[in-house]
Length: 283
Image 1 (cartoon, one colour):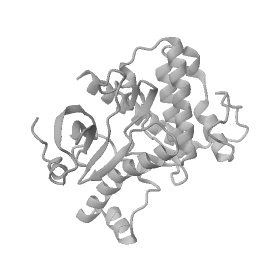
Image 2 (tube, one colour; image 1 turned 180 degrees about the vertical axis):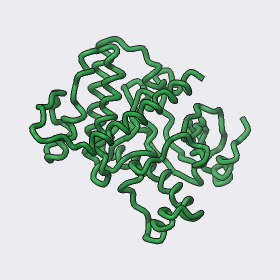
Image 3 (cartoon, rainbow, N blue to C red; image 1 turned 120 degrees about the vertical axis):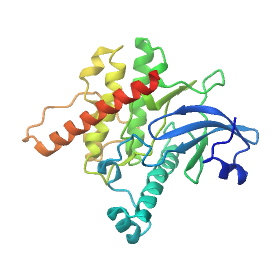
Image 4 (cartoon, rainbow, N blue to C red; image 1 turned 30 degrees about the horizontal axis):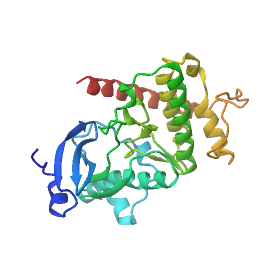
């Protein structure tokens, strides 16, 4: 196929030899299957800020670092330079998260390079060698649903132990290869220690998993794994091997109204995103 304009610089630099086909197009990027020498990889081309439907809420930006105070001020003022820096921070967040999580043993695609707004990374494949399906497209029975749910909870724990929360985890950004689930799409990754809504983000991610697998395994719908994981993390007791029960004792302290309102807002946004993703999947 014809080389997309945004990928041309990587071809000219010898990083990509051929664009084979478009793999998918989502709210934040378009992904292509590319050939790099003898290797088949994928190139994620980030959409411009005004073309993305993903809401870059302040919650996702909180805690992210920039190179210097000048860049921070420019981003805060929304100048042309500041918007350029914000784009770099948004794109680099995924690259940084992928390297960080891969080192922690999380099942994510191997990143290679991010150049001119294009992330070159591993193409996750199924047992037949074709591109791996999304979790949403995999037929599940009870046994497989329980297996994948447990595997993904472990991935969430590994991520949190590495200081990262996905922030938009659902059946639409999880691929399934021969070994099981692989987590993708991390430009909105949240810094667990630097975000005031980290707990809400984590619990929402885990609730999304429970809601999806709960269609096949109804008892997961009432589980409290997200809150349990966060409580253990805050107490400094969370490790990759910490056993989980999905049960949390009722709190004895007064409710945090502000936190409740933030969770309501996050839940509203999550439902909007879920509807949008369903429409994109059906398109």
